[in-house]
Image 1: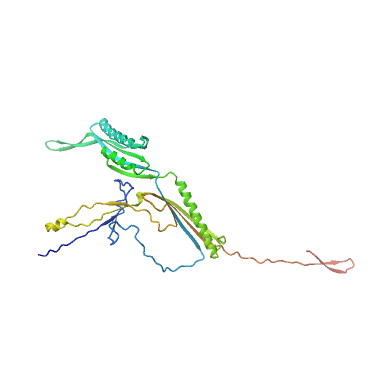
Image 2: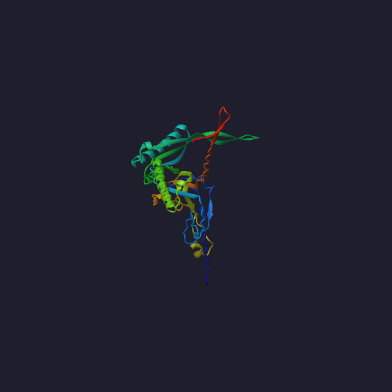
Length: 343
């Protein structure tokens, strides 16, 4: 007997914005920026982010008397510190019981983290809410039924802010929180202390590139001193949470269907996440280009437009020379003509 087996492959890619290097559960943009992509053979299962652009080598240049200098600089900066935010909630029959239960969990987390080298001053508690919890009590009468809200206890919600300086410490933070039933990681924020120095470094790099451009134009016969200049610049800072992508990729292959000659059994679709840094293709200067872990990307752009100065019109100099002639009449009636030198 000859059997024909049909292999069904399904590959799905869903692109969405996420939150941070240590991705938390908070994902505000997940439902807003969902982009489906088709599978591209030869590129693996991950989505193609920043796809390859077809090179157009025969672009026609358009000469112009206006010179444009458009430069971009970027630096990849490792964070000097991180802040992880965890959310926890606790319920109890009384306010005192609820508060004691929460404090017990938090104190246990602090004890574990201090043993890992994290200072107690780097752990901050943010109280979100402390409200009573109500239940519905049904009151039945002969001709009617009433539903009354009755207080049953209290609910306390808090956030734990934990600051650390090394990514290797995050494993200990997760372990400490999980041991005390704190699983909701909201986000991880990145911080750098010397942002002004970084912008100054990028500025110096751009100035060097501008001077090289000026020398290049000078060799071509353009003296930029004879040009008027218009300028625009911009600076920005991107954090890893802006560049996390997610996808779902799998091949639904059912060996059970082959053995038992049954239909396809679908597998659970797990969402995977990866960090995709800002591409360097559009930048003229990149500092610290090789990165191993997610980094903060600090950039600066500048654009200069040089236009020729208007030619000054030389007005001709007109010199007016006036020669004066005087007539002198003597008492006897004689007229004497004299010309005075007025120079």
